[in-house]
Length: 111
Length: 114
Image 1 (cartoon, each protein chain N blue to C red):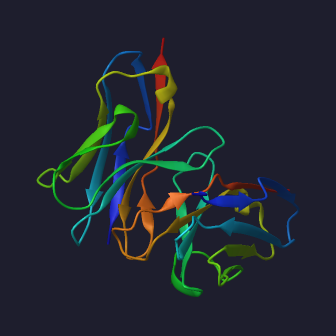
Image 2 (cartoon, rainbow over the protein chains, first blue to last red):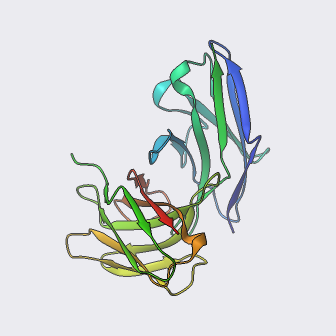
C-alpha cells in the first residue's frame, strides 16, 4: 500500500527566506511522487513530480524536490519565498489507480 | 488546450436529497477520477473511470456513483445526502490509468448539505 505523511500542518516563513515542506512516503512498489499546490477556493495545481531518473526534480514557480529513497522522503524546497507562495501544499503518492494525498501543509509568508 | 472544468461551482442541498456534479476532462484525456476534500483535509479518492468503465473505487458507500460518457466527460451522483457529504468535490483527468500518469485537477464543486 502507498501513503504519505506531511510533517507540519502549518509553516510560516518570512519573504525571501527558504521554504522547506516535508513529506515522507510509504510504498510497497517503486513510488511515484507528486507535489500539488492549492490556492484558496481553487483546485489543485501540479508543482512537480518524480517517476524515475534524476532524483532532484525542478518544478514551476522556483520549487524543487529531492527524492531520497534511503530516507523515504520527498521534501519540497524553494530558496526564496514570495508572498504569492502562500497556499496549501499537498504531497501525494500514486496508488494503483488513485492519488493518495497527505493532509496538507499551509504555508504562510510574512512580509 | 482546455483544462478540466467542473459545474456547478457551488451547490446547496438539504439532507436526503440527490445531487449530480459534472466534469469535462482535458482534451486528449480518457481517464477521470473523483475526489472528496473535506475542510482542512487532503483529497480522498472516490472512484476512477477509464474509457467509460469504473476502474477503481475508494472507501465510499454505494450511494456515491458515477458515469463516464463517450467524450470522456463524467458525472458524480450522490444519493441520500448526509451532512458529512459537505465538501469540495474535485475531478481530475489524465491521459491514462498508469501510476505515472499525472492527474490534472479542475477547480472543484463546493457542496453544502444543510
